[in-house]
Length: 145
View 1: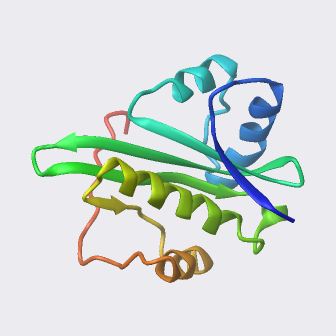
View 2: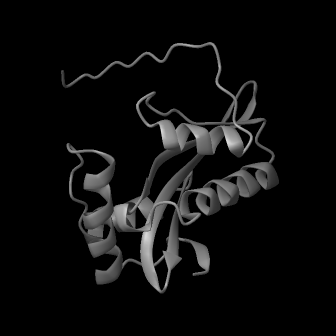
């Protein structure tokens, strides 16, 4: 089946259902997003939410965040999730390639992403699509902890 990738702009019941189905596959602690939260996300200037469709059904999503800093425009891929039922069909690759195209067109100096080591299949995909592991540590501060 053909995969299409589009920018999330209009929020309707289909979008709410899709995110309700996809986000728990990404994180067990993900908060369910209602129509208002999704509309706010879709209208955030620094973030482009991409959705992938196969057979007319939303089967994946990715958030592309771009931000200027003194060293130049940077981009990050966040919250990549492909529906369990659609894995291995090129959905993740289509989303990543679209993110790469958009970041490059915007003039981003780099496009970064992080992935847990346990996600071996996803990590192989990222490397196949041109991403390289960096010698770096990720630090996180969580004010709610």
